[in-house]
Image (cartoon, rainbow, N blue to C red; front, side, top):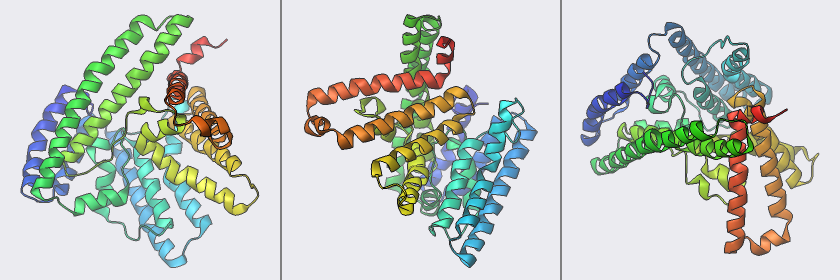
Length: 384
C-alpha cells in the first residue's frame, strides 16, 4: 500500500481520521492516537518487508540514542566543534551508506523515508549544538520521525515546532478551522496529483519520448509541470492530513511558477527543503567564511555558499551525474543572479517596472524548466 497513492490508503485514511476528528472536537490530545495510526500506516506501506522495517527501527533507535548522548555531552562540555561534527556525521552516516551502496544496487539500510528522516535527525543535532534543544523526549522524537503524512516525501517539519503542536491541543473552534483547511488541501491535492499531473504525464509519454529537438522541448515542459502537480499534490494531501491529526505541518509550495528570479523560485519551490538547506547549510557556510576573514567579498562568499549548498542538495537527491549537474546548475544560476542584482545599475533602476518583471519571469521559467530537464535524466539521451 502506497501512501497517498493507493485507493486502500485513502479508505483507511477516512476511517482512521474519524477518531482523530472526534478527539479534536473534544479538545483532547490527538498525538497518542496519531502515533499508533502512523505505526499502522508504516507497517501497511512496507507490505510485510521485515528487513526494511527492522532497518527503520534500528535507525530511529540509533538516531535517538545519538541525540540523547549528544545532549549530555553538549551540556557538560559546551560547544566543542570537533565533537559536534562527529555527532553530525554519525547522524547522516546511515543515509550516506544507503546512497553510496545504492549505486552498486545493494541499497544497504534503505527503508521508507530514510532521506526525510535524516533531515529531522540532523536538525536535532544542529539545534542541540546551538543550545536551542536541551532535552529529548523519546515519544516526541519517535512520533516526529514516523508521523505518517510526511514520512516518505515530506514536507520537512522542525522538531520544536512539531513538539509545540502535540503538547498544545487546540480549542474546538480553532481545530474545526484547521480540519476544514486540511480537508480542502486533501481534495485540492487529489485534483493536482490524480487528474492534472496524470494529464501532463500522458502528454509527456505521447509527444515527448522521441530523440528530437521538438520532443525534447515537449518533454522538458510537460515533465516539469507533471513534477510540480504530482509533488505539490502529494504535499497538499500530506499537509491536509496532518491538520486533521492536529499537526500544522508547513506548506511545501507557494505558486513557484510566478517567480521572477531564481532566488524567488527557491523560496517558493519545495519550501521546507530549500529553507532547511538555507538555514542549516547556506547560512552556516556564509557565517563561517565571514568569520575566517580570508575572503573579504560578500558576493564571493555567497557564491561559494551557493555551490556548497546546491551541490549537497544535488548529492542528496542521488549520486548520479544528472542530479549532481542539477545542483551545480542551480548553484550557477543563483550565483549569477546574486552578482547581477547586487552589481547591475540597470536591474536596480528597472526591477519594479512591469515590462522588466515580465521578461525576468519568462527568463526564469525557461531556466527552471531546463533544470527540470536535467533533473529528469532525460537530457543524457541528447548528449553525444
